[in-house]
Length: 147
Image (cartoon, rainbow, N blue to C red; front, side):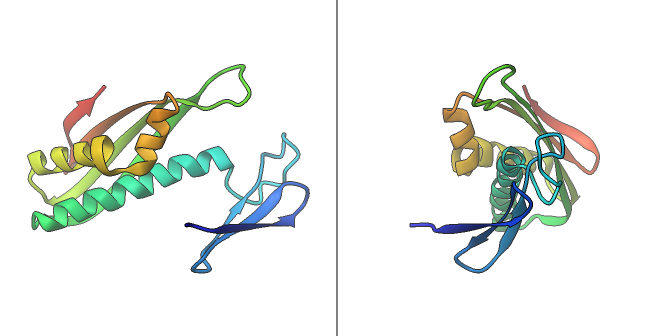
């Protein structure tokens, strides 16, 4: 069982979350919502988790295939349901950008495996009704655009 602890630490809405290993993350709401911009919004944290989860999968897959990753970044955009409470993620798009000595077909397949099979965060968002799309770029060339 995973255990997370949160403690209110800044203003009305600022919290520090800590995992069992002592790693911390600061969370808050917007200034407009009464917060102080102390940390990440909880819904943004879900998208960060998606990037981290899929990124770890993709690196693991490509390393097993002896691909040399020199750089790896992601850009994630999401759209939430309008006018609803709770307002869950409706659409999420990720652009995976890899550089190095990487076979484009292997990069495409690694991203597919992560997003369709291995990434638990992706599956969690999907089960909540979210639509996930992604694009794969290797050395600045678009390889795959899963729309």
